[in-house]
Image (cartoon, rainbow, N blue to C red; front, side, top):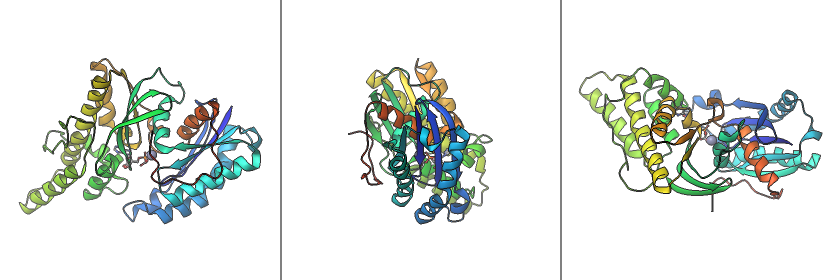
Length: 335
Ligand code: KG4
Ligand code: ZN
């Protein structure tokens, strides 16, 4: 079974061909970071236009690399939300056109579901249940999954997403956009204990998160040090900020596994590319007797293979999405 995946929810144009649900035949991404960098963030209109330009050639290249033609496609899986409406529309229009022209099936996929399913590429899903930590530029949530497409969001951020916090601190340190990967690299040379930033909601007793206080604390620290004429060590600042985020995320994920009696953790979303988060989830998960899965680095950030993977499973369950479906910028995961 050959499934074409298309993902254009934010600033990456992505097309992939996945065979039998889990084997990646091609996985192409046209990043727009150069276009948005000078604005310090993603500009929705610019993103949509860039998707229009990039999508058709990328689609052709993905088929060539996979060694398949339009006639070989059994189904098209596309991200229908959450995301930027103009950006989503471009991918959805292309996906619908391919389905209509070739007679292939059409399946809409939730972007966050895709991030979770990125864990299943190559090896397929382990036995549920799972606790999933989904941390991206737009979302931070803990999800309880008892079955492959059953999602119960048990906690989420009350304000900023984790990726957003990384990007804001990156900007504060003059590291460009997106800040996450740059903060990660800088933090490798810093002392995570240098500055004690607040661990928001660490002991709140629920699974919600809050990032805005941490972001303000970082800003206040920088201002206070500058006012006092002291030099700031950017590496120490990056490492200390990162540690505060990772502490809460690891703590709450492990607490969720204990409370729900779940033995498998899935990590998903761009922030899961973070070196410290991966390290600590792996070591502390192992110490707690948990199985911790995370996608390979290239499949943590936005890609279309993860959408094709989740879409194949939905297609095989008999799900078909109407071609009338609209882009849904605020699409929720689960009921
Ligand atoms: O999942 P993703 O590619 O797009 C969304 O769905 O939002 O996530 C992008 C986010 C950005 O905020 C980026 O800074 C962050 O993931 N990110 C990282 C790292 N790599 C990407 N954050 C921390 N450490 C990283 N290594
Ligand atoms: Zn994403």
